[in-house]
Length: 202
Ligand SMILES: [Fe+2]
Image (cartoon, rainbow, N blue to C red; front, top):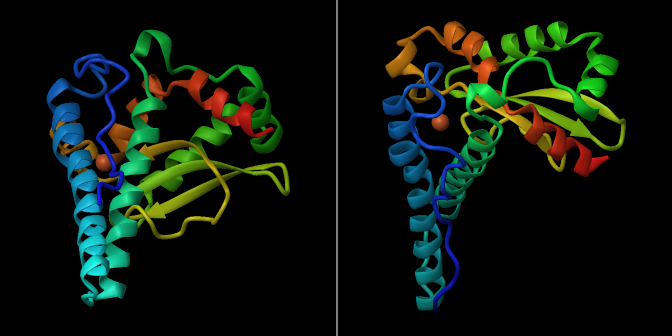
């Protein structure tokens, strides 16, 4: 019974590479402790369910599935987040490519998009995420607020950019100032990666 489990993926840059916007220590704790905890948490539940099924034992299905979706959501969102950031030298600014054009078409301007996205991420209730998604049915970019890692998700609408608004993403560098973190994060958004994700869908 050696079923596949989730793994902590390698970061696409070194821990210090997002400085000064995200410090080495902030990134290290976020990645090595918080992201890893979601991977381990998901695997623990999967293994518990595998064991219970093999033994014909019962388990609390509702509680297990709730925890599983929280942990898998955390793992998938963090993986997207690491890759939609890059060192400031090759990130930030206004997006080009097809995503740049689409943002202008749907939001009017990049500044308008940035303000709406920042507000969405700033006002996520409790801990959560701001996400840019693309609806293939209506050919629209949609901003989504994700509470925790798994609430308010639009089923089947794929995510192309996420910003982590859990306090664990910024408290070492910015204390409780989520707005200051969000103002700085735009310097390290990897628009090439976002454009690649968008282009693949269209
Ligand atoms: Fe996080």
